[in-house]
Image (cartoon, rainbow, N blue to C red; front, side):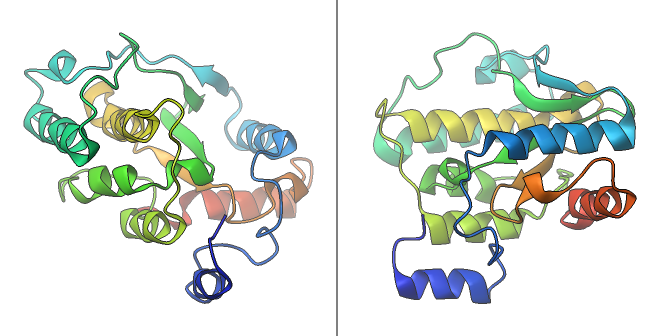
Amino acid sequence: MVRSRKAKQEFLIRGLVSLKALNHNERCKECKTAVLSLLESLFGEVKKNYSLPLGSKPEFFEGNRYYPVLKGIFNHLQKSRGHQQFVRSPRLPNVDFFVPNPGFIVEFDEGQHFTEQRMISLKDYPADLELGYDRDLWIDRCRMLHRRDNDPPFRDEQRAWYDTLRDFAPAILNLRPTVRLFSKARIWCKLNHEDAKDVATFKEELFKERQ
């Protein structure tokens, strides 16, 4: 949650969160279910909790043109609080949604994704990396929300790194840019996948923040 009344007001004024969604449970299961149904209405087949054929350590990407950038981000995260061993899985953990046709990842970001470590990684992205969301807006949300998850102690570094890999995955796997939806941008479960107007609203939300 936004930590003070003043910060909450600034968060609303700057358009970083929807007023209607402010007090809605960001872990609402129906919201993710609605997003899945809306994606299916637009694109047909959608794979939930999809495993990409990618490793989770920088060395996996050696030889790719983005390897030096990824290695730099990884090192920067290691230095941020001194946690060295935050990668605990040999493969990149599953993405929230994968749309096979035309081929892109959709991530649903709750508040715990907006941390100092995530901001560190986002600021290191190269200018030529295509994203399906507004990087500057995500940085602002990191700065304002400033969440911390210390269970385990390296969780923020780990989450920031995995999110980074999901953003770079399209450049490595020849996919369209990764799209990110913010849980507090609206009350997603209020959108009906059988209502053409709601589907059109969702489509606009899906691509309006593209970088």
